[in-house]
Image 1 (cartoon, rainbow, N blue to C red):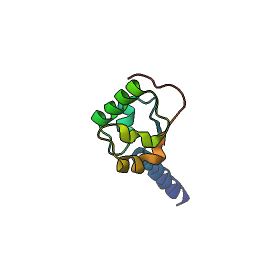
Image 2 (tube, rainbow, N blue to C red):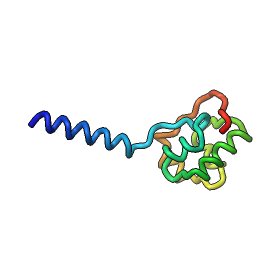
Image 3 (cartoon, rainbow, N blue to C red):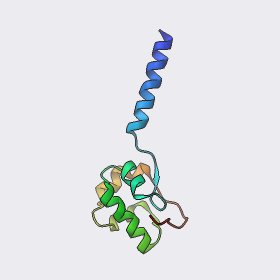
Image 4 (tube, rainbow, N blue to C red):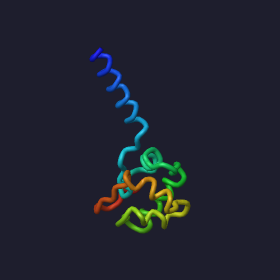
Amino acid sequence: MKKLLMVTTLALMLMAGNVISAPVNINSASAEMLAENLKGIGLSKAQAIVNYRTQNGPFKHADELVNVKGVGLKTVEKNIQNIQVSKTSAKKG
């Protein structure tokens, strides 16, 4: 019985890992990574984020994402726990 409980618990933890988004650095992540890990961000908006940081330099704060066309405050708020901002320069692409 204990083995069954342990196996079930492990399986649930692994499945939860697929549902929960991973933290993503908005200054270095690719458009694909942004779209995959941020709720409400599809590939088009993710590419807009990459284009914005390429033209304007790296983000200093997560709330600066609202400056990207199509990204609103609610989107930032629901992703705030998964947004990382590094001080390094942004990578293109």
